[in-house]
Image (cartoon, rainbow, N blue to C red):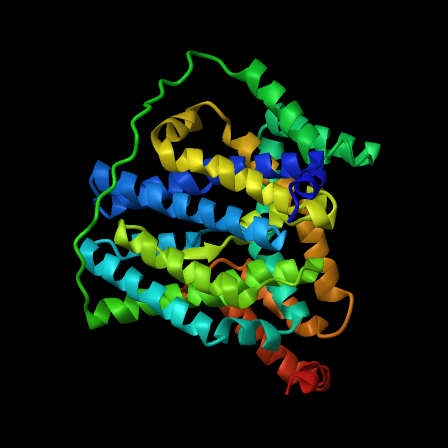
Length: 399
C-alpha cells in the first residue's frame, strides 16, 4: 500500500472513533483486569506482566492486520474469559491457569490452520449473528440511558454533543467527536478537589511457572477456546462482514491463537477479536468504509500506553466520572447497535434473530459459558423449528 494513499484514507471521524475506543479500553476493561488480578491473589509484578502482555500483543497485531488488510480488525483479550478466570479463584493454582491458557492458544492456532474458524462464519446465518451481536451490546445502550439520568451534567452534555453532531450531519464534524469535547468540558468544570496522584512505574515482565492438569484443561482451556472462536470470531468478524468487509477469518483466528500463546507465556489470558472495539472502530460513525482501519490503528497505538503505564491509567479512574465513560461508550456503539438490528430483522430468519437477541441480552452463564454463545445455538434451534425452510435455503448454497 502506497504511503500517500494511507494518509489520504485518514479522516476526522476515524480519529475520533479511535480516541473513543481507546477511552473505552482504558476505563472499561482495565479496572476489571486489576480486580480479577486481586481475586486470583497475584503479586504486583505478576499483575503488571499480565496487563502489559495482553495489551501490547493485541496492539501490535491490530496495527499489523489493519495496515495489511486495510480493515479495522481489533485484537484485544476476552473480557468474559477474564471474568470466568476470576470465578475460578481458589479452585486452581495460577500455574495451572497459565498452563490451561497456553493449551487454549495452541488449540486456537491448530483449528485456525484447519479452517474451522472460516467454516463457523460460513455456516452461521448473518441475521442470527447480528441478533446475537445486538444483544451482546444492548447493555451499553441501556447504561448510556441510565448514566444520562444519573448524571445530567456530564453524561447529559455528552449526549447533547452527540445529538448536535448528528443534526449537523457533516462528515467533518463527527458526532462522537463533539460528544468527547462537550463531555470533556463538563468533566473539567465539574471536577472538584486535587488531581489524583499518578505512578509512572514501568511494567514488570514475569515468566510464570507452568502446570498442566486435565481438570484445568476441561474447566479452563475448552471454555477459553469457545470464547475466542465461538464468540470473538462470530461477533467481531461477523460485524465486519455485515459492514461489507471481506474479513480474513483464518488469518485472524491464527493470529488470535498466537497472541494467546504469547500472552500465556507472560501470565496473560487468551486474545480475542474485540466485539466492543469493532463496534466502535468499524461502525458507520468511524467514517468512510475505506478509511475506518485508521480508527483501529489509532486506538491500538494508544493502547500501547496501557501496556506501558497501567498504573497511571488506573489512577485516572478517579478523575474521569463513570457517567462520562459509560455515555461515551454507549454513544459510540449506538450506530453499530442500529445497524445490527437492521441486519437482524430486515430480511429472513427474523425469528431466530429475535431469539438470539433475547437470549444474549439476558446476562447468565451456563456450564461456565456466557449467554452470547447460547444465544447463537438457541437462535439456530428456533430458526430450525420456526422457519426451517428459510434456514435450509440459507444453507443450501453452502452445502
